[in-house]
Image (cartoon, rainbow, N blue to C red; front, side, top):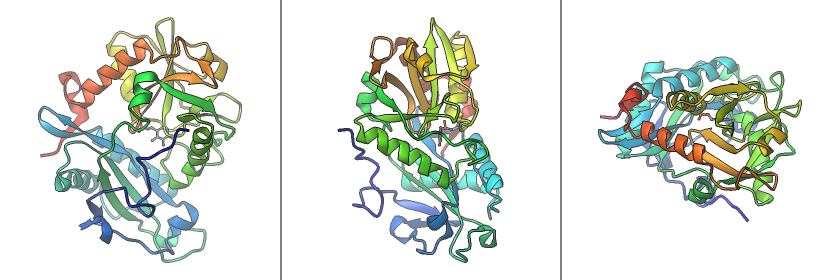
Length: 319
Ligand SMILES: *Cc1c(COP(=O)(O)O)cnc(C)c1O
C-alpha cells in the first residue's frame, strides 16, 4: 500500500530536519522554534502559509516566482484579516535568508503565519498581529520518483472540494487542509497516490494540493479556477505550454472527460508536473506517463533550473 514516508511530522519520529528557521524575525535552530499548546491556530486552523521551491541553477540556488508567492501570502493574510508584522520586502528577504543560512542548493520553503496564544475565543483577531516563521528543508519529488516515471494513480475522493461560500479556497489557509488531508488519507488507504476532488456540482476541482490539466487531440486543457486555489505552477505551465506551441483552453471538466483524455497531469510547487496514469482504476490513454506531459514537464524543469533565459525574470538568485 502506498504510504508517505518523507513527510513525517516533527513531533512524530523527528525525521523532518529543517535546520535554521526564521522565527518572528530571528534565525533559530529548529529545536528552539517552539509555540504554546494554547496557540489559536492549533485549535482552530487559523494559519496561512505558502510553499515555494529553490532550485539549483548554473548560477547557484534560485527561488522560483518569489514575488508571486509572497504576494499570495499577503493575500491569504488579507482574507483572514491577519496583520503581518513584516513587509512583503522583509518576507522576500527572510525567505532568501533561510535558503542561504542553511546552505541549501535546492529545497522546499514553507512560510507560515498563525494566530498565537493570547485568547482561545474563536475570533482570532485579538491575537493580531500574527506570528510568522519560514522553514525550509530538502524535499524531492512530492509524489515519488515512481509516480513521475510511471504516472500517479488517482481516485476520486468521496470528500468534495468545499464551495466558495464555505471556505476561502483561493487562500492557503491552514484549516482548508482538513479537506485535503481527509481526501489524501482516503486515497492512500485505497492504494492510490493522490486524490481527485470534485466540486459540489460534481465537476473536477483539483488534487489535494495540485491543479489538474488534461490533453486531448494535442490541445491542452487547464481545469478552470472555480473553487480551486489559483496555482502559480498552473500559471507557469500555461505560459510555458503556449510558448511550446500548444493551444491552451481553460475549461470546466467532468471526471468522465478525464477518463476519455489522452493524458492527464497534476501541477503544484510540491508536485511540479506529475503525470497521471490511472483515474478510478481506468487507464488514462495508454496508462503510462504521457508524451506531451513529459515534454511540458521537461520544459518546466528547464525553466526552474535556470536553463531557459526567456524566463529569467521568474528566478530570484540567492547570493
Ligand atoms: C498550493 C496548492 C496548489 C498548488 O499551487 P502552487 O501555487 O502551484 O504551488 C494547488 N491546490 C491546492 C489546494 C494548494 O494548496
